[in-house]
Image 1 (tube, rainbow, N blue to C red):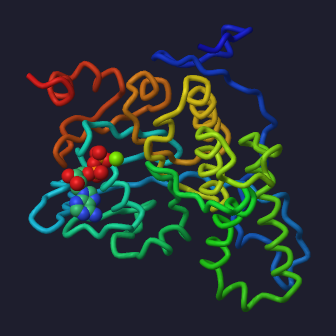
Image 2 (image 1 turned 90 degrees about the vertical axis):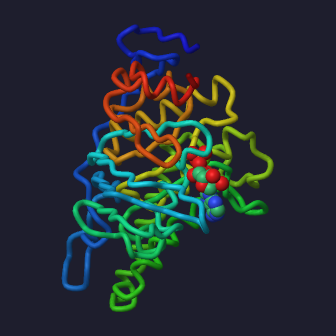
Image 3 (image 1 turned 180 degrees about the vertical axis):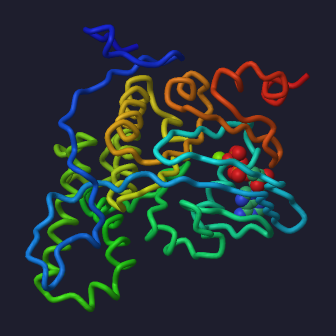
Length: 304
Ligand SMILES: Nc1ncnc2c1ncn2[C@@H]1O[C@H](COP(=O)(O)OP(=O)(O)O)[C@@H](O)[C@H]1O
Ligand SMILES: [Mg+2]
């Protein structure tokens, strides 16, 4: 457990006490399209994250062959908040994230990003709109450096903006590239991984690899970040570090975070809203305290 020199600088009511860092105040968020265009002499301040979007799922059904994986799942994740998704193994949590990010197509139901229906958009288009994710099992490119892995997140954003990039003057394109590099630098600073930026991925500890995966997702300038078991397999110190980064993302970057997590202590510490899945259905939702004392949730985890 972390020792906090100043008691007030510790937050959380669950199993983990998390240090809160102090930070400079960020300037107003700017989107990449607000970057100087031909005819405009304005050079924007350093690129900043985009504010969080709401995600609303309405009556999602997902089947594989005869197997019904999600059955009428609905939830509302408010913009800028941390919502946790819990439930026993096989409940459908990862499948729900795959459906939100566009890797799976639901048979019925709707997913809305800030009110816009994105249900039929392919994964790359959703990524372009600001839906980013990390995976339950680390999905990084071995053989590439930390920096190159992070850049892959940024390049995705460039691809999503290909037409406007083609229509832009060369100097505007150079400016966009410079802003991408600035964002990568900020992400690297934020996650405190500057000292490993040129290391190959496979030489890093598990905890650092998870942090690089988060960096790559942040390089996409997400409005919504889906974190699938971000601390699974981590030791205590790595878990506390990751929890602190997630809280900081909420406090400073105002990104909407959807979090799959088993550790109820961490869920209590981080989230404002919890959705409980069991056998593909939502069996409870509410504040962490409400959900923790819900008899049906206790039954789903512990059996009768
Ligand atoms: N691509 C797929 N094909 C077939 N079945 C799948 C697929 N993805 C998930 N499932 C099934 O969906 C169920 C829920 O899995 P998952 O979403 O991974 O659960 P959780 O993340 O809650 O542990 C499991 O029975 C799993 O085998
Ligand atoms: Mg899972």
